[in-house]
Image (cartoon, rainbow, N blue to C red; front, side):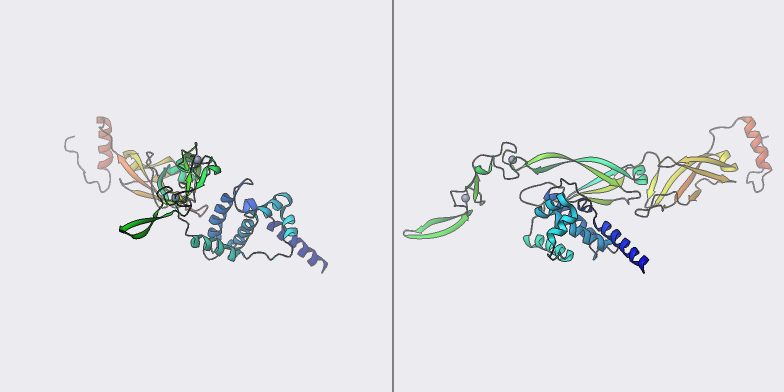
Length: 373
Ligand SMILES: [Zn+2]
Ligand SMILES: [Zn+2]
């Protein structure tokens, strides 16, 4: 009895420890992450782990964990408490409060977005070529993107300061103007048109932002790292969510990279999980057999060995020496080695005579005689 209670207590401690994973780590953000970063991270991760979509065992627990982290970190009061006092402080704070349902939270988050009909900026699609060896081994590749970001001086308003944004005097802020037109003597028609002084915005800027010249956005070079996973299929799309051009008029679209292997000068060819290599051998090797070393994409050596005759164009299959199979750690496709046979440009009379002697004695030789000798 006692021992089972002890085990239970021990398990309880384990469970508590597991639950207290760092909330910033759960959302994969820095402690200095902005509200926007936290929102983006939640958007990305909650979709990925939603049990409707992700059937992996543990996905639901992860989903609940993500929802909890977002609930805390998106609320500035709770976040402050968490930063200072950790989970314990939060528990004390939330005592008696009903914890949110992670599924309601998810549908609220995405539901509200669709109700608001937030316009999304354009998604940019870029073909991104990497070395085949990088796809073989996996690699992190740094790259830059030139894009527009909200001006950090005016935060996208286009005005030098908040005091320089005034309600339009032409329309009183409505963005519309009523124009009275006389169509007959004594008879007027009223038409409503977009205010020409503010272009319908209802606000005018008296002094434009000196940093962006009133355009609200500035050019920026952003740095990213592309994680090339071993065996990534050709054309695999890697999405950098919300990293497209920024504008005050829309929510930034995505940057999508389509990853492809560069046409390799080294002679390797890839088709899905198979690799192809052409090896050139001499006539002696084609006839007598050989033992050669082939240096693979990551530098390891594959032994190419044959005894007996190798026909030109013969393809040798070497299992498990192809490309890694994406998302199946430790599994590989096959390697196909095609043999080219090169003949010597000319033979010395002595070699010629010796070959004659050899071939005359050979069974099934199609050129049995040597008349000219
Ligand atoms: Zn106006
Ligand atoms: Zn500006």
